[in-house]
Length: 375
Ligand SMILES: *Cc1c(COP(=O)(O)O)cnc(C)c1O
Image (cartoon, rainbow, N blue to C red):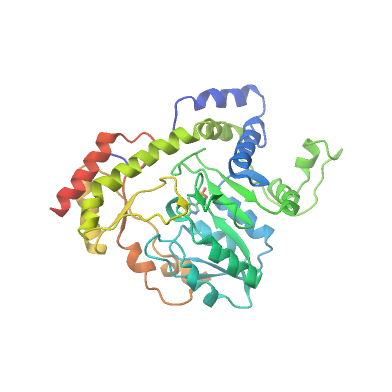
């Protein structure tokens, strides 16, 4: 059986977890949390990275830091994970969905301006599969209308757009370290903060509304409750698991990229004959092989392909029922403009097994079976 995903595991994570235990500090902001924050800051050049309990929570923090309030509108694609919308719905905002581009499955940057009203407060681009959205256009529109930009870069660590790391282009960037992502800590994420003036506010928010971070740095002599907040900091044991992988980030990345290229080459003939479509990476985008997908002709063909692969011991999955068609999406959101591609393309897309350590002969087997299906 070839699994769709196996959580990343190098083998020596336990050493660092043991160290965290021996440090006698397993709560948040211990040695490994600090190391992860520093690694992210150095890798991306962001002024501040804060490890969080999830990408969902990082996005919630961003929504709070942007003062999103009831009645505000936030623009995003409908083809995304629920968390992208949840973080803003929790603040009482209305989510405004716009269509995607069929080539990258990312928000169609040319449709954003038409969806803006005087209630719009933010744009949330989602970098699907670690392939960047057209950020130049998105940042231009945001500047013109004074909107915040919160990048859902859950899938976009180690990726760049015109040389800029994803998550550092907008005001805030959100990473995920869920077990399905390229680097993991079970459940976890990070918030990247561009504006240095927002760092202190973010630290307070993450530490239950207290100025404890400042206290630990010795900048004040007692800590107190200074604002509203929550608990968005993960256990240092989880951070220890993640840090082991961040230290080997290139090793994991290269392994995934190798699998990705193998799929791409192996299936290119089917693409050239117009039978399936494969991922497209625009010039100027560096991706991280977060996912490899194929697009079948339509929903019916995709269903048969999934079934065929399953019969042959291959787990392939689809995802993202467009949010605007879901019960909560109907309640809290609106689709502005025409749904030309969101529904149609989402019904065709099928994700193939992709994880660190997937073997070459397994990838070859998946390719062979897909070819057999189309024979
Ligand atoms: C995984 C994912 C999330 C949620 O990440 P968590 O860390 O599980 O909260 C949000 N958005 C996208 C696009 C994702 O892929």
